[in-house]
Image (cartoon, rainbow, N blue to C red; front, side, top):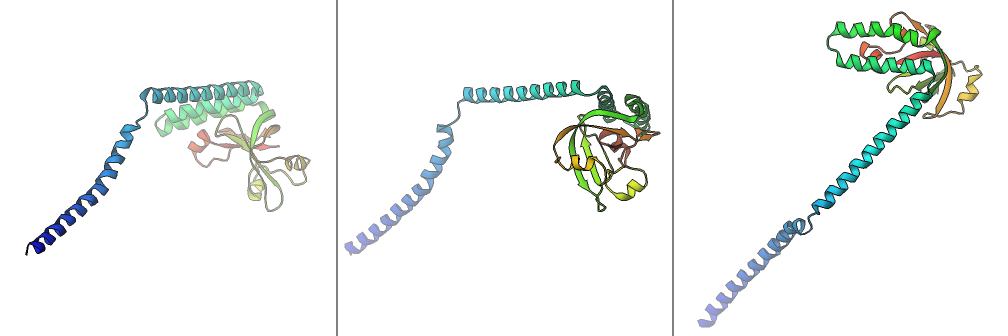
Amino acid sequence: MSDTHGGAGGSKAGRNLALLLAGLAVTVPFTFCCCVPLMFAPDQQEVARMNAEADMRRAAERAAAAEARRELWESLPATQRAFCESLERYRALYEQTEGDLARSRLRNQRGPELRDAVPGGVAQDWVGTVETLTTTSAGNVVLVLDLPCEGFSVGTTNNELSAVLGAPLISRDSPLYDTLAELSVGDGLRFSGRLLPDDRDGWQLSALTERGSMTAAQFYMRF
């Protein structure tokens, strides 16, 4: 009888030991994982130093970008600089103004100023970046050039129907064709052309809405 009870007791003790070990197997790794971040917490001074260095890099990048923009702005022909300055000033005013009538009045005021900025619409040696360079189904060239005033561009229409209605395209027979064939999207260049007159906006543009015309418009240009 004593052997039997001893065996039962031993079996029970074994089960208890197994449960204890299983509990430790779960608890110890969990405790270790929870403690590791505390054991290896980053030094606050080091974190502050790294943050300060990151702030300095960002400030240097902003300063370099501002200097590059200033140099580019100073290199622009007077007509392009006046054109872009007017576009940027009226965009800021438009974004700050409330009320449809007040905003519409800004558009009316901008038109004569843009017209005066580029006498006769003649753009001579302006600076831009190729945004779009492709052809229509008839083989004529579609060209759009981004201006330094971000969001605004000059260029042709993108279809033959609009060309029939007066918006420009570059003919596949144009002397410019071979020159343009050497360019790619993203290339910077100096260019010349003529803006097309418009009673309200000073020069014709392709935006469908007033907001578009005031904040991010393409002006038609004949190259």
